Image (cartoon, rainbow, N blue to C red; front, side, top):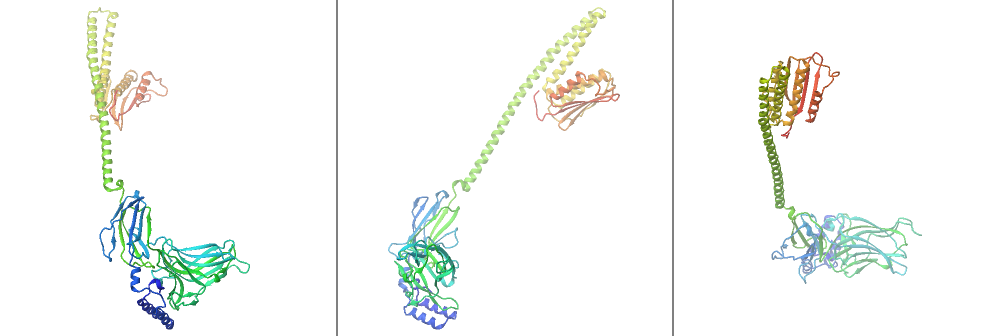
Length: 605
C-alpha cells in the first residue's frame, strides 16, 4: 500500500484489508489503519484528480538522424483509446546515430508522470531513462557548515522488483565512504532529484551506519546509527512526522510514509519517496539535532534494505549509435510512478535498410557483372591464345613451305647435276683407255657422285616437313636399314610396329636419329663382322627407343678405344635430350640403345 501520491482510493483500501485478513495479521491494528485511511487520514487522490494526473500521453518531439532533423508525422488521427502511430522512419547504417526526443503530447495538459520505452525487435523489456535518486551523507564542521558530501545513486529497478511493492523482495545494499577533513558531524538525506526529471518509488526498511575504522572513543565496527522502527506523531498518516526526520525540497508531497504489508508481521510505516512531480525535488532529511558525530579520515559503511523503481517523467531523449539491418518498432508509454502503463502507447516503425552494395539486387548484379567480366577475360585470353596459335601455325606453315621449296629445289637442281655428272663419268669411262690408271679415277668420281646423291636424298628427306612424324621416320628407317644391309649381304631383321601414334617428330630430331642409326649400322658392317643385324623401334611411354643389335664379334667397352663415331652419336643425342647407350661383350655381339623424348607438342626444327 502506497502513500497518498500513489493514488489510494476506497477500493484500494478494501483490497488492502482483504490482504491483511488473508495473511492473518492482528485484526485490531488492521482495523485501525483502515479506519484512518477511510477517514481521510491518508491523503489520496479522488477520481477526477487521478484521471487528470494520468491522462497525459507521450509524443515525439523531434527525430535527429545523423545530425539532421527529420519531421515526425502522425500517420492517422486516432481516438484516445488507440495507439498513436507515426509515419515510419527509414535510414542507412551510415546515417546513425539516431536520436528520438519524447515529450508530453499536447501543451497545457498534465505532464507525463513517467516514461518507459522499448525498441521491439531489439529489446525485450521496458526501458527507463536517465533518472536518479540519492542517499546522501552531508558532512558538517563544528559550526554546522557543510564541508562535503557523499552521494550513493539509485536508478532503474532494485534487484527483485516485481512491478508492485507487495510483489517485490527487499534488497540489501552497502555503500562506503571516508569522512572528509574538518568534518565533525553528518546528516543523512534521502532525496529524489528534480533534474533530470526523476519520478518513481523508493522506500527503505533498515538503515545502519557503521564506523569501519576506530576512533578515540569507538572501536572498529562500532554502530553509529541504526534506523529500524519509526517513532513520532501521526505515523498512521502518509503526512505523519517521524521523529528525527523532516521533509526537504520543493516538492513536499514527494517524501511520505509508506506502509508495507509483510507476511506474519504487523504493518509498519517506512520512509518513502513517491515522486510524481517531474519538475520538483523532495526528500527526507535528518534533523540537525539528530546528526551523527564522526571523525575526519574515518571510513564509514552505510547498510540498507530497500526496494525501488526509478524512472524519468515529462520528457526524455534516446540515442541509438547503431542497429543491425532489419525492421523495428519504437514504442513509448506514459506510466504511473511504479512503471505501469496508464494509457495507449506511441508507435514509430524504424527500418534500417542495407546500403545499396549489400542489397540482393546489387549482389545479383555484381555477381552477374563478375561472371560477365570473367567470361570476357576468359574469352579474351582464349582469343589471344587462338591468335597466337594461328600466328604460330601461319609462321610454321610459312617455314614448312620454305622447307618444302628448299627440299624440292635441292632435289631437282642438285639431283639433276649429280645425274649429269654421273652420265658424264659413264661416258668418260666408256671412252677411256683400258689402263687402270685412267679408268680408276673415273670410277671414283662416279662412286663419289652416288654417295653425294645418297647424302642429298637424306638431307632432302630431313628438310621435307611432310615427313615430320613417327610414321615418316619409321618408313625411312626401314627403307634405309634394309637397303644398306641388303647391299652388304647381311641379313636384316626389322621389328617396327605397324600402327604408330600420331606424334610429331621435328626434322632436327629425325636428322640426328638417322645420323646415329647410320653410324651404328656402319660400325656393325665395318667392325663387327656380323651376319645379322636387328633394328627395333618402340614407344616407351613418352620416349622413342631405337635398338640396333648385331651378332658380330663384340668388344669390351671398358678397354676398347672409342672412336669419333660413338662420341658424335652421344653428343647428337644429348643435343635433343636423349641418350645413346652401347652394350657389348666380346664374342656376344653389340647392342646400341638410342633414347629420345617425344615432343609434347609440335616443335620446329
